[in-house]
Length: 125
Image 1 (tube, rainbow, N blue to C red):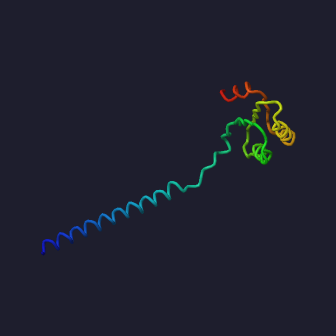
Image 2 (cartoon, one colour; image 1 turned 45 degrees about the vertical axis):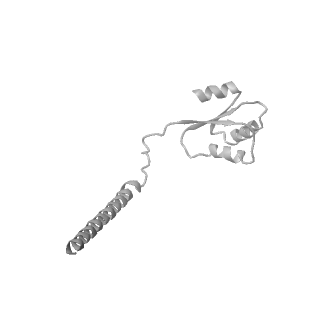
Image 3 (cartoon, rainbow, N blue to C red; image 1 turned 90 degrees about the vertical axis):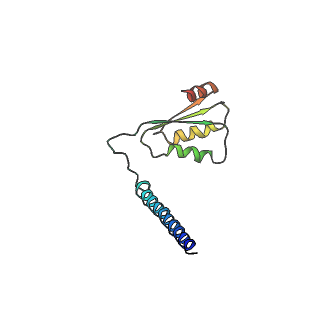
């Protein structure tokens, strides 16, 4: 009977020690994650300029929020970018919206490409 008591007592100590070890690992992981993953992002130095980007926006048709969505491209906070609007058909009503936005924001480098061939060439390159 005494042997059974000491055996169960040993198992209890062993499993309690394992349980404490697992909790210690959890606490270490939380502290490590807090230190490494929750750093404030470092902004690029002003001496290194950001690269210019080209944003290709294929369009077909008009929906009720298209003007607002397209205007968000014109009002981005990025130093150097160009907008390339690719429209397959000359009779597409989205051309009028894009032209209005280009007139409204003349400081933005924006171009309209009409025709399926132009659009496919832009996407490939």
